[in-house]
Every structure is written in C-alpha cells, then in structure tokens.
Image 1 (cartoon, rainbow, N blue to C red):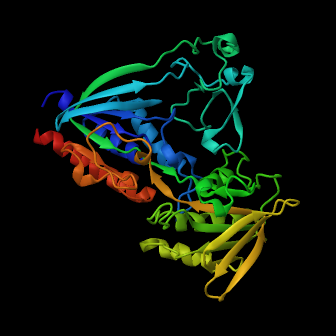
Image 2: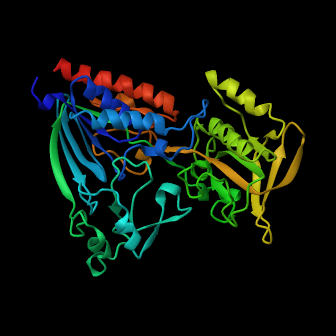
Image 3: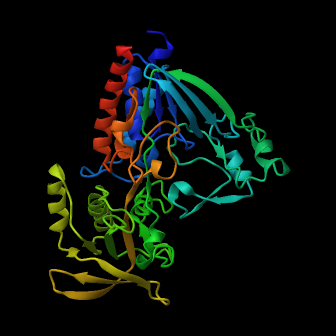
Length: 419
C-alpha cells in the first residue's frame, strides 16, 4: 500500500466527522479534515446540553480536540471546501479551496484586534441574537482558538487598525484563497445539517413576532457562552421567561415543507423545558405536539418531564401565532385534540422545533452522488471507498451519528486494505 492509499479525507468537522477522523488516525492512517466553518465542532458546539443526561457537549468535543492535537496524522483545514473529488477506491484526487482567515498561526488570542475594530457583524454562532466585531473569535471554546476576520464587514487596508494593534504580526489583510490538491484512498462525507428556515412556515410568526425563536436559538440562550451568558431572556425586552410554549414539527412532517420526521425535535423540546424549569422554578411550560417521539431509552426522560406539574403537553397543531403589540407577549391559537376544543393562550416566548435539513440540500458534494428529493445522500449510489455518515443519510441524534462515524472509519480502513 502506498502512502497516498493510506490517506483518508473527511468532509465536515462536526462531531461525526471528528469521530471518524480520530478513529482512522489512531489506527495509523493519515487523515485530512475539510471544514467550511472557521472552527471545528459543528452543531454540537452550539448546544447547551445533550439529552438525556443533560451534560455539556464541550466535554466530548474537548476529548476529540485533544486527540487531534496529539496526533500528527490529522491535518485539518478550516474555512475550506472540497471543490472536486474524482478517481476510484484507493486512488481519489481531491481539490480543496482554502478561504483566507486573514490571521495566521502567530495569533495568541489576545483580543487586541477585536478591541480596536470599529465594525460590528451579526454573530452567526448565536444565530444573530448579538453582534461581534469583524475581527472575532467564533466562541470562547473555539478550536482552533484563533481569531478570524469577516471580509464581508471588514473595511480592509483602508482601516487596518487591527494590524497596528497586533504585536505578533498575525494579521495579513492581503491573504488570498488557496487551492491545494491531495490524493486519498477513501472519503468520508460528514457535512452535517442545517436548521429548516422557519420563516417559510408563515403562520408560526418567526421573523415577524419578536419573541418567537427556534430550538437552536434556545440552545444558545441557555448556554453559558451564549448571548445572555446562559440567562434565558426574551429577545424583545430582556424579560425573564416565566411562561413558554414549544411548538413541535415546525415544518417537519408537512408535505409543504419537510415531509419527514426530524427525529431530534421532541427530545430537544423536552430537554429545553428542563432549562426553563430549572432556571425559573415558578415557570410554566406548554408543549404543543402532533406525536411525542422518544425512541428507546429516551422514554424515561419523557416521563420525567411529563410528570412535572408545571409542564402541560397538548396534542394538537398550532394554527396561528401573533403578537400583542403593547406587551410583546406571544398569542398562540391551537387545537386541543384530547380536550375537544380550540384554545388561545398567551406566553412570554415561543420556541419552534424547527426541522433538520441535510447540508447537501443546498450545497451538493462535488462528486458523482445521488440524493433523495429532500437532499439526503443515497448510500447505495456511492462509489466504493466513499461513505456518508450521520445526518447526511437521515435525521439522527449525536449518539447515533458517533456510532455511524466509528463504523465508517472501520469501513474506510477496510476499503484501503482491500487495495
């Protein structure tokens, strides 16, 4: 086996991609990770807690980051994308585009560049709920812990205050995109997922009613490194949230939006109900659902939340969400199937359980791959030596993604050994 046959390409640096990468590397194979964001960790890095144990995800991420730092056989490229994949099992040619970070490896994370930067940008990591400077660190536990400059907002050489402030010669505003070519023996596709655009579900008020947010925005609000330092406050006025509604299947299981179940949404809302109940003991929670789906071992977590006397589960679809123009309270109109009536209730805030969309729905992987109408990869269409994992195939939670990634690492190694 040649050295190039022992190389593995992993597209995506989220939890599943990291898992596949470290497992292959620790088995003695050279691994290249290509990640579009400026940091590794993917969606998991944006979560407050996992279900059902309610432990912070940074524990698992930090372990994998340490395994990467200590293993010279892993090379990762952030702000990067695979532009072309050609060849066959054991001999793939890959073209990778690396977009400029404008900050090199001399960066110490001192924050001087952000302190002098005069321009602000919406913080994408926090889903636009706050701002950062154009020179910023993605989040306080980012890996790599290195600043990045957003060229969509940076004034460039006409400003250059960050260049003057940096004592380490780490900032170069003239950086250009680079293209590199590598050869690998196998490819693992772990490009992850995006949140469904809730503005498309126009009756639920997202984007029009100030205190209607998505489930991922709720994760950021509850996170200690989020826009409110973990205090759950409603966006319109910073008021503490004492009454909250969760609307399930916001776009999922709907032929006009996502015809499939997004799998994680029920558990995510149950988990987030515990965020509110723990932070505000006198708070009230109401969950509007079509069906509550808590497969396998998650059933006991459902029982725990269901039995909380301050949590009400209402089976029925939400027809409309509007806003009280004076108080900014959220008005929910819904059916109550078991009660045999329609109801109208007022809440401080509403959380939409927006669905999961594979990243390949909007950005196809540059290889000969077939997709379903919803954008999921069809595994049987993949060439030998190429493996799709996690949410590229169907909606799954973190635990199943990690299991799938470990299996793909083994298959990838077997693929190269066969050659």
